[in-house]
Length: 226
Image (cartoon, rainbow, N blue to C red; front, side):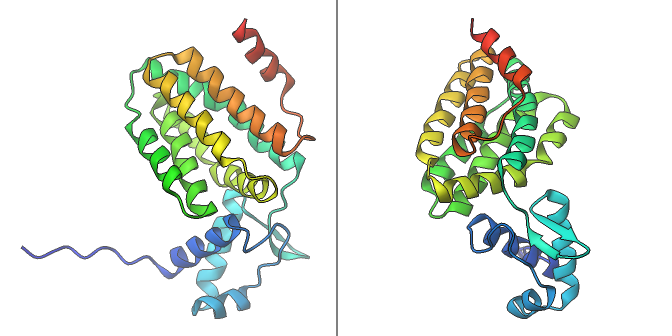
């Protein structure tokens, strides 16, 4: 039996993955300029795949394109963190509760936790953490809700990477992840949702004290604990 060769990533995908890895590991820092000719030379490609990769990264919120400044890595501040985490705070706990109520499989979340524990660098850990959260909300039964949360995944990873560089806290977050998964596997939808809400809110408030999250959502969460 002849083996089927694995598809070779396109030049654009190669460049895209490489730039994203550099951003999430801090090799490319927020505000740093991304010059097409320089990146093309570094990766040994023409400017076309670099340009396409940067457009994709702009669409996911990792870089910013400006008529005057060109392309730069997106700056991370309290306002940016608030925007991203408000979305997560409002949508992720509800998606997880729905997934638990449906009895959805959470094997992928368990596998992602193992990969995060075994990660050897920040980018690998960030990717595993994103996969953990995605494995919690994706089986919620509402594909549109899953796609909405997918749209902020890379931006959330950028916030995490910047926060970890200033104050490593991934071990604490790993413990919170395990507690969220434990409650979900026990079928405690409300408990898992509250734990996820607290996890999201505490991270951004700890990392960016100036980021004031949606007060109504916070109040509703507090009421749910009573």
